[in-house]
Image 1 (tube, rainbow, N blue to C red):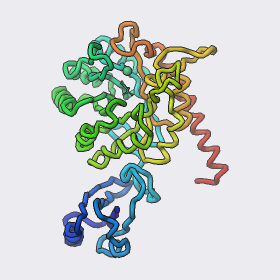
Image 2 (cartoon, protein in one colour):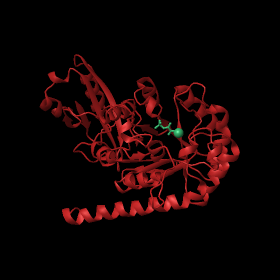
Image 3 (cartoon, rainbow, N blue to C red):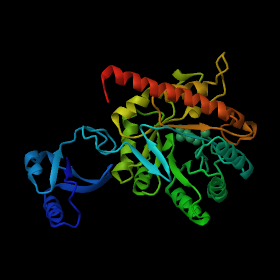
Image 4 (cartoon, protein in one colour):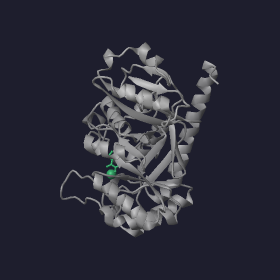
Length: 373
Ligand code: PEP
Ligand code: MN
């Protein structure tokens, strides 16, 4: 059950203390306080967990300070959409807005290899007005003998160079909670020249202890990749783990599903789920065309499959594109064969813009039909 408090109720008021005291004394019920930054005010919601079937909804609704009590049968209590649409579908981090209504491109290296390549990439991003990138320092690899990423040793130069080229947010995968501490320490050491969005990769979507840890870590927003071999519902529940521990700044990433039905692509592209995730939850939705497609194959008219699927995701309303680039793909230590090159960046960005314009026109078109304001 969720109890939504009246907006003007402060935590040090007597009414709040009396209410909490009453709820704490209910048998077999635990109370978890959740605060949601709304457009104009902070909404406080109390999550009652345990034997809530024994509680009477009308009685709960009559308690002083309670605006509404709702029985929740649906999943995704925090990140899900409910009829109460006052809850936000966007957040801001380090000056960049992440919402279900806008779009950010994160082009960059799958894996950081050396400062020269990092700088070449960041420079070209700045030249094309980009303020976000991807840079992998911790790489989970199938083969234990493959390059595992430079780890914390590369963080200072990556962050300093990002600052030099005015990059505000770097998507960076973490596979263990110590990586978060290392990122914190390196940002501190370099004077916070940039920001980091922690990425949880597809292999860790159901690493519940990692999710709980990162959920308690409120400083960084999170990009949670869909698990490549589990249902969408299971992956959305994984996102909810982050929120249930306190971190609601979560972007949900589609990156293709592992099945040979998608051959010859590396994964079966699942971007038809962009609008589904937006309907079921309040999370902005990211697409990862590189790890979905996994090659530089192109169609006869010359468009790379990576660009085709990017356009498909964007025209369906995607809010973030995570895409591999490398200045010299033949020298990349991870995923060179799927990387685009800096000279392809302007064409890629223009293709994204064309698809985004088309999406916006599609939304306007349907609004006329349905007479929505
Ligand atoms: C990545 O984005 O570098 C990555 C490894 O992605 P995924 O977890 O989706 O495989
Ligand atoms: Mn990769």
